[in-house]
Length: 321
Image (cartoon, rainbow, N blue to C red; front, side, top):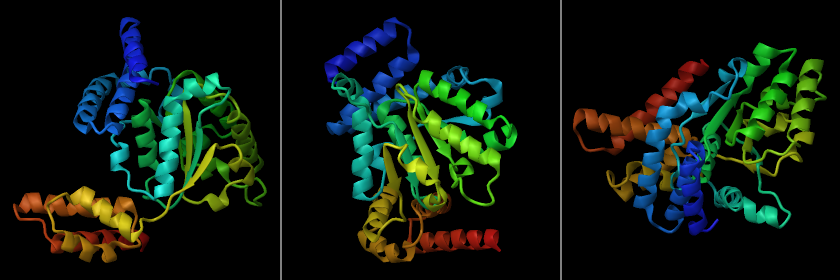
């Protein structure tokens, strides 16, 4: 969509009192500004939208009935493409998804549909949820996290009906819908330990994914793609496998998190020690060390980061033990 078209859409949304449509177009303008290198303007637009959106959370969730509302949680879109540290091929595919959504009307005029069904797999903490937030932010859509475990456990026996109801909502209320812990329903139908009810739920989901999603994007996320039913993969427009960060990606992540608070030499020395850990763990290590620096009123040091990492490792070992 050209910038002139976005301005016209913005005016129409304003005079039609379409607040969510106004927010969507405003965030699309912010994304276009960011791509043009106008990062300050893009950030200011996003801040204004987020500030006004935060006061309307209950209103925007009012379309969800009481039975489903506590199983679908709206999350604030905190991340942009600039925050994303993933492999180059993953970034290209995410950018393609965003571009196709932004230009979906052009694609429709040519008899094509934008990518709207994505499957994310990979270890915990490698960026699946963050990427969903990025897609929501860059497309100007709200982000809803669907907690499948709650739907299955609470509505066992009528889960298929609740899923059908949820997909009706998805088709009529634009958003990015992240189905977290997707293996709760997506496990192979042939597995001996799966009861008939779970197979029916999965069959229902497979049929529902074939319905038009209109302006929404559905993302299913799992920590282990190996357990998913093979029939699922052809239902998605793209399948993205997230991995633990490489050496080079850890360097970029540390640079983004620590900015100019620590030397390039220290970052280089730390990188090897952080290999094998997820992006989420590395970010938590940086945040803990920065807090220590602020609270003790001392410059950030390599030792603070090492201590933070050791504490994180100890916490994991305590939980596992």
